[in-house]
Image 1 (cartoon, rainbow, N blue to C red):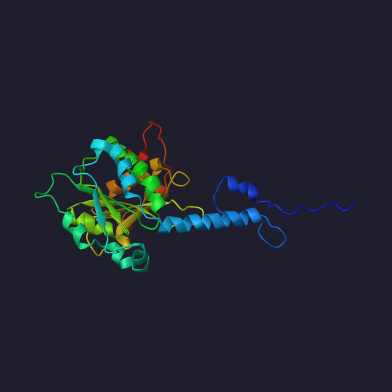
Image 2 (cartoon, helix red, strand yellow):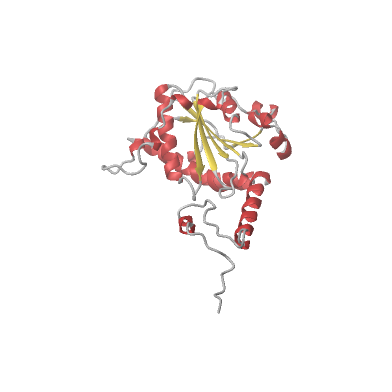
Length: 274
């Protein structure tokens, strides 16, 4: 009696999927993908499209930020808008997402006198994934503010800004208008098929309009299934400290956070905060 062959031929690399969300070891049914893997691909594609097109629920984001209480400077978060009036324009005209509309620009002003300590502006922008911001911006910001306080670094925090239809570069204009020494932008990254909720963190020292990407440092894939909030926060603190020390950011900073394991040293302190 001829042995009946299975409909789905498993791939020997399938066991590696316990270590990654990448689509490896999918197996086959004849010369095609198994139906389960095809459906999983279609679901991932739909989630990625939703992440791009669904609007940011700003009211829910503000509710989450309320948990930070007095750690956020007054006045409360500023709600700003880029020159891209809606999502369709935002996707078709990236340049309009890099600058504020007239009404939003009018809301921002530098302090009347130069602050006695360096000023840090923090910007949250929807970017290309609203769900990345919705799910990860508040826990990332909470961790960073906790670590910033614990590090002993003395910064004057500018009012927090929330930008709809914003691109990364819009943080440079906001930082300049607020008179900030540095700006940190939390933004939804372009979603992948296994990472629709990836948050990007960008740092610019001496922000001003017209800077290119070479002046920014990026920490990518911040989410529970990617780079943890703890590690992302420690990397951001390291880059911020180096930017302040060198008076610049971007390619002029040697990012040692990839060379040295992030974790506890022998004296139970993280090497990035020593």
